[in-house]
Structure formats: C-alpha cells, structure tokens
Length: 125
Image (cartoon, rainbow, N blue to C red; front, side, top):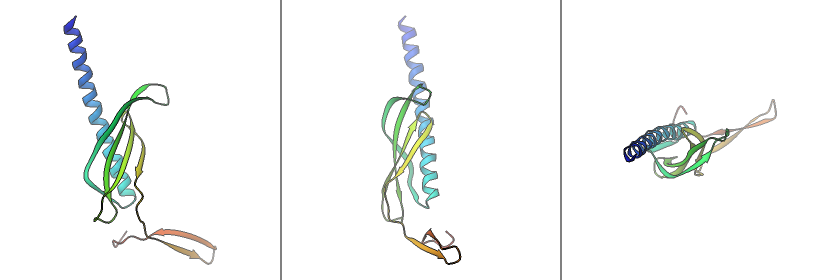
C-alpha cells in the first residue's frame, strides 16, 4: 500500500510540474503578444508566478488558476508591470500598468469624423 501512495504522489508531482511549465509558456506568449500589439518591450523575456489556487472553469471543472507577472517598458528607460491571469493553460486576461501614450487627433472635414492615432517615436510604426 505505501508503494502505491508513493507512486501516486510522484505521478501527481510530475503532472503538476508539466502543467506549470505549460501554463508558464502560455502566459509568456500572452504577455509577449500584448506587448507586440501595443508596441511595447517585454523586459527579461520572462514571467513569474505570483499565486496559484484552485478555480472552476465555465464547465464547472476544477483547474488551477495562476497569476503571472512580467515587466515591460514603453520607452526603454523605465519598467512597468503587467500580469497574465491563467486558468489551466488558457490565458483569461492580460493587464498592463498604465503608461503614457502620445496620441494625436485627425479630423476628416469630408465626413466630420475625428480619429485618434497613436504617435510612435520609431519610424515605420
């Protein structure tokens, strides 16, 4: 009987390790995608797990919910914090700390519409 318990604990630990690696990679991909979308720099190319807890998904199945933190920069001279909330290996939400973004308004006299455009410092963006 003790051998079965040891094998079960070993298998559970192995599953947890594999699931954690898979969730971490998915969180890193979600953080990287958010930074690319807004023209930000993902710093250190890493995420760090801040919390893990059991949670239920939309179907009522028990899964692990994890919160990962990462750092990004909007100008290369500062560090801002972002987070990715994971449920299992699925990214539920990505949040970025507020940062300054230069915007300019473009008014189209023909349609009387005003559009907001992001002003990027780098050419071609």
